Length: 218
Length: 280
Image (cartoon, rainbow over all chains, first blue to last red; front, side, top):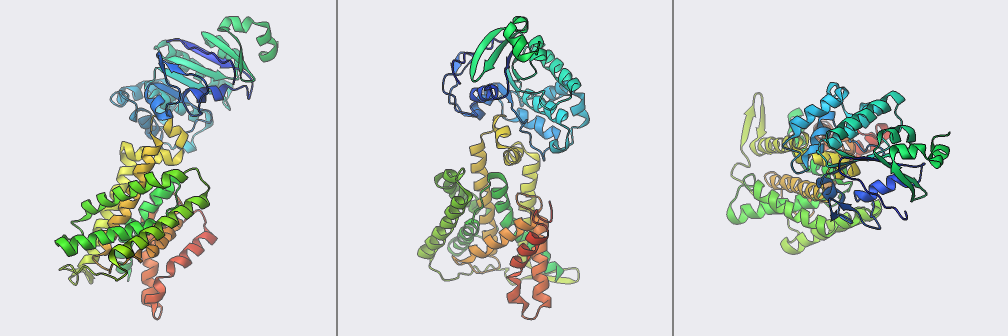
């Protein structure tokens, strides 16, 4: 990756769009230390470059990773509990957070005793987001939540993300589903071959000629 | 016969559940597992011979001691091969096994030693059956400890974290779980469980530097029968092994000797017929 300069302000939904292999997932992984970053990553004014993933998670950055990375033989309840278990402050508030999450995702409430491995793709994606939210993060990184989901479910999920954002959560969303994402985001970045080629507000990018041709098929 | 098989399976569960933990959580096939059991047995023997501590009363101290030795082994050796090819990992643990065995020979000679507790020959009647008190005590304590481990894994935060790490390392670390510390804990616990089984062996059998290998092999048989990584199946798999051995002892002429080889046959059968394990 080169020349990547990306900023997420508190309270924003920022999206990062681009084609397959453009480097979106790599960028998220560099932020949470899953991959060693060459460059600098700062969170709340402090450099977090090179810190272990678990330490970054405990600082308040929750990452909904590509492929969801759930625990197939554990129940929905166990996932939610683990989401809160090791983040300072989250454990004490787990009951309340769980209730809020069951309001956001009634489906997970119905399935709270089901094992993650036996759930549908859409339910698993909801669980992955819910598990991350249990940490009461300050920043939520979401990697391609729409992958493999039916369009109706994508809409539901996006609406949920917007609602969570209205409650004050900052979101960095990586997506290939460009139109819907840009409609929802406050600001966006377009990444191509490991470089950020465009940035602007969601509506600016939607109106941009390059975006129209390359990503919206207009 | 049944009752002997069942009683024996208690110790087998405890001796092998640690190996299942090591394989299941860390993915390390520890060939030195039996040597930690042997160290535990010597600890039991010396505490008894020098200070008159009953091996069962020595469990907390012995378990803590072996936990420490196991943790040091993890930090100094195992940790370095986590990403190495499996062959390297096996060679390393095999080396640790040889090292510990020879260390025991140097420190305590190769002579078998016997701890004769006062109730060694005491028998109790269970309804129509008469069984040795040591056997009964060992079964009860071993089962209690194994079931407590299940409870820890099933109910507590740290136990769930261990299962989470076993199922998805990346997913777990993104939740703030320190994978390396979970591994350290799992390995220490794994060796401590083996050590505890060793402590209890001193109630029934003699202790020598060479007792480890047989238990490593039997523990392997049990985790293969249970299905690799299936910790909950260990109790049932131990029962299968315990009962099969008792069966051979009773019904095969000169079965006492043959019984010790039953686990080979079971590994073979399970791998041929149901390689994913009987209880998975």
